[in-house]
Image (tube, rainbow, N blue to C red; front, side, top):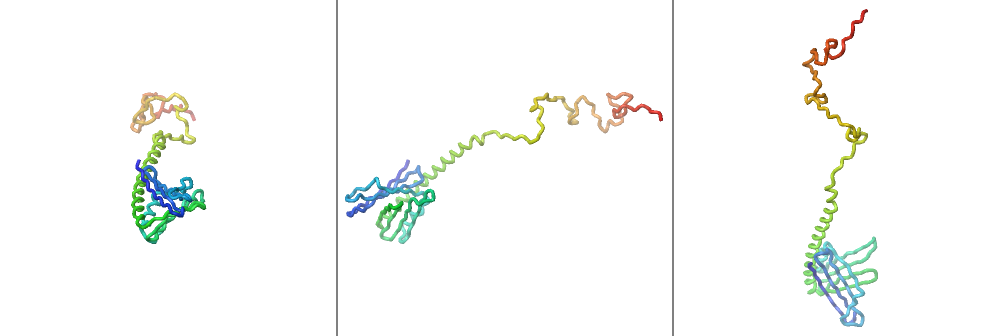
Length: 226
């Protein structure tokens, strides 16, 4: 796992200094900003229990980075949860000086940067952006693998054809004996042991006819006196 940490500690004699810790890795597609305030009455101590933490995804970070090096530019983002504002973050570049401010409820945290620090900040955030893109690619790959595993059984399941409504059941479905009588291949549905009577046989006696039958196998009508 690749991890990147960037720290800024800026105490003041008045005790109103601040600290900023930026952390990112290539396994989570978000960068974490942790802001702390200086403990009143101390020189270099910061209150780790009173912090404000916000995250930026790679889309938001990619929009922030160009603003860092441009005088007079600003950038802001608002994170909401359940349609309620949670955290508001904005960055202002005033040329020789810039600051990043985060507000959550009544709590306001601010960190200032000199002009020479802005170049290092932009360079570091570009490195972090590379990690976030790598992490996003990893998350997309894992999500695709999970999707494939979830749908694998559905893809391999045999397709079952639904029965046709109001269709007559087959002999097999009725458990009836199936008629295996071979049929004459020349005339579908006609048994082989039945003599074919085609057009060419009209007017001829078939083997099953006797003298008292007509050419068509119909018994002759007796003579009826008039």
